[in-house]
Length: 124
Image (tube, rainbow, N blue to C red; front, side):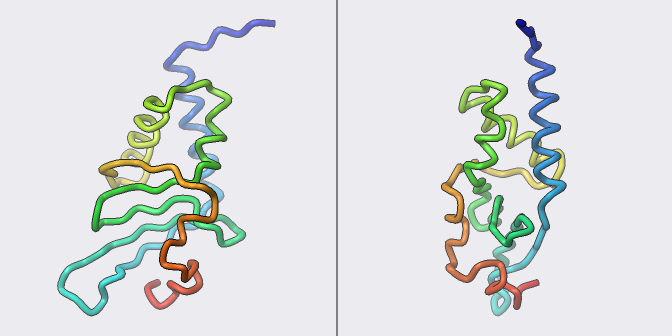
């Protein structure tokens, strides 16, 4: 059986997939520069196991996304450029932060402070 899905419908399905992922995540906002006049706002999204799935950093404006999110979207056969644009638009629309650039990283590599979300608890 063959299905024809329009481009608009693919994007709608991708938004639904991303919304479902977001619904299962916990958002944590904090500032890494608590002792400075300059802020370094961080927004972290973690799953129920404590793994960081997405991380936005004010210092460079980048959004770092676990490659697991990208693999969830693979069913829609989107190009890399489409996935980047789609996640950029979705994140801007849903989270109200506009990322400068998006980077996909291997799972478990978003804890670049090596503190885990638990180690960042002083910031929450």
